[in-house]
Figure 1 (cartoon, helix red, strand yellow):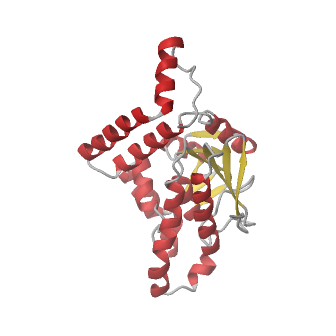
Figure 2: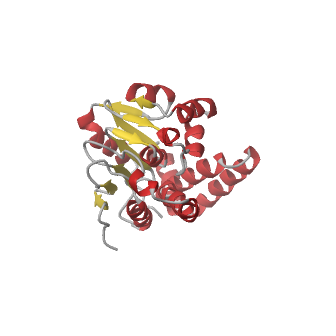
Figure 3: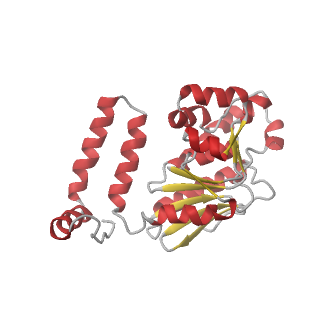
Length: 261
């Protein structure tokens, strides 16, 4: 499958970069949403991709949904579209590999919700994040009311959603909305550094860890522990488990060479 008009999957040295490129602000219209879904599918299935970076370019991550497109939509239109909107973002969240968002400039509304779909977030010192949908008379509709409170806590998420205010890089780091702040020019390279540690890792164990954490957060503790138990036991059928344990016994931790099977 070829790249979309506005979203590309670029693969190099085991890292797949999902690159948004819809100037000037990477507005997330229906076409971009569907191209994101396809890029996420390809990144998940491609055996050459061990980890993923979400990137909107040097100036902006994504300033939000295409309001001009939405303004003309009726209630019936959005009833029909809202499920596909959410599922396109969920496709990114469910990529079965480590995903880091590289955030430059604005990540607002749908842009912030897209960043929330990543496992980790690196942002530039010029970044502005937020969920300003309330200022348009609506609420976040691509996961913001669910993923944001799971990340920063319900009270803090409510304050951000109720007010619609923008959060600067340092506050975002302090509240756990992002995981690292770097100079704006270094955002993409910092994200590559972050994901490079997973390239050549035990792919099935990384997948199991991500699924156990994500699915566990959606469940009660007993269900989560059962998910963990099943994933843990299942990894004893993998070649990487044997390699990792034999290497540990012979040479100590961190010396194994994994094959992803």
